[in-house]
Image 1: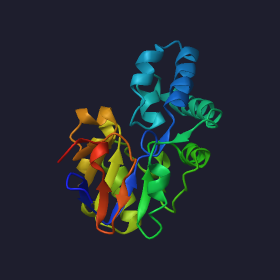
Image 2: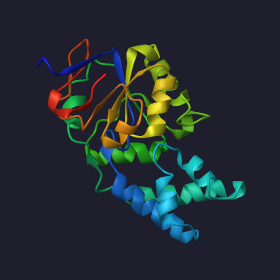
Image 3: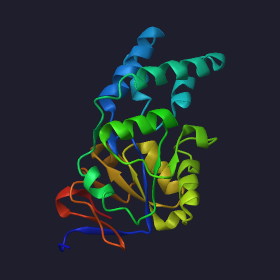
Image 4: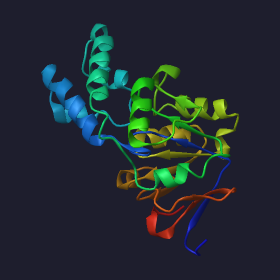
Length: 220
C-alpha cells in the first residue's frame, strides 16, 4: 500500500452496472435516441434523463401513464438488440476476480434480462445477488435498491461500499447509509465519499477496498 493510496473499509460491495461494471453508454444512447425519434421527442432531452433511472421512470417523464408499459418494452427490446459490443469498465475484471469470498451484488436500474445480458457480453461474472428494476417499488435516487442489496447479502448498509457513476445513484447509496465510491468525472459533481477515474488497480485487502493514488480524483 502506497502512502497516498486510499483504503475504504468495508465488509462487502454493491456495484451499479452501467458505467461502473460495464460501458453500455453508446448502446444506451442509440436505443433511447431511436425511441425518442419514434415518439416525436427531442433525443437529447430524452437521453439526458436516462442515467441512474429505471426505464419506466424515464419513460414516465415523456409518455402518458397508459403508454408507459409498452414504451418500456420497446426501449428494452432496442437495448437487448444492441448488447454485443458491451465492454467491461477498465479494472473491473481484475477486481471481481478477487471477490470469490467477498459479499458483493449488482444493484441496477435496468431490468434483469438486460442487466445480465450486458454483464455476460462484457465477460463480467453474474453474482448470486442482482437487484434490478423489477425488485423495488422505488428506483434510485430512493435508497430502496441499495437497502435491498445489502439485506440480500445479510449485511448492514453502513458496512458496504456502493460503487456508482450517476448523481441519482450516488444519492441513493448515501441515503442508504453506505460509503459511496464515485466512478468517473461526472461523480465529481456529487457528494460521493471518494471519486476515482476507473477501477484500474483497485484491490480487495480483506479489510476493504484499496484504491491506487493514480486513480483517485477526489479524496475523503
